[in-house]
Image (cartoon, rainbow, N blue to C red; front, side):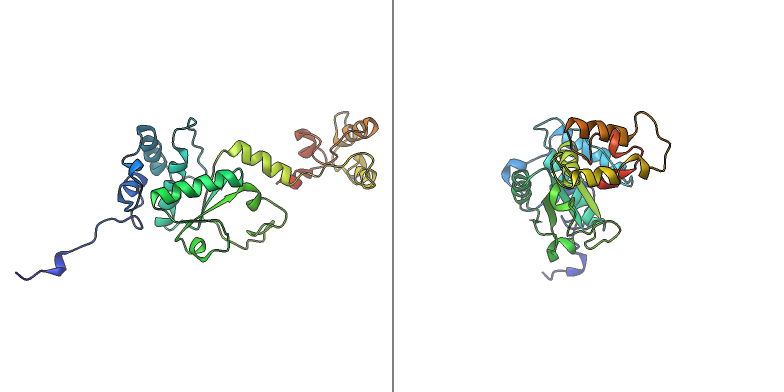
Length: 235
């Protein structure tokens, strides 16, 4: 009996389907422990898929709820929809290794090098610690200079990552350091374009200097975003 190859058509594959729940089912090489999605994972992926056009989305899940799988499926869905390259950011190298291990168990390609061709062409998800992305000499670019494009990004444990990013752009100096007084002068009230008031940055800086405390830059949240407008140091 002759076979009519014209009627044989390929169905959705893990590299074409965009619905993350269907994507999960289409993964051909996932480990046996991933026989099905948990109800909470399915609900979250469904809601995300319906609102994926939003620029930013916050997903809250309990510890042990399977958020890594959700994040990886979201990024793979973005890649399939043409919104790549895709980056998964974790708080440190250890957590990144766990994410890459989970990706391997799902049968998803993951790399740790931003200059990887597989990442830049959408064949793999980049998994990196936050300090690789947020630093003064980032491979991705600094300021308006964009060296490596990012289409979609998942930040796992955003609070921890934010704290690390803040540390990356905070300069702390003891009062005895030779540069302390020079920087104090630079960021004194005389440089401020705003009216002087009792709670201005310069006043707090002088009080801290007299007390021998620091850090000078990033003394507190109000100081970094206050009269001298030096919030750019952390943003």
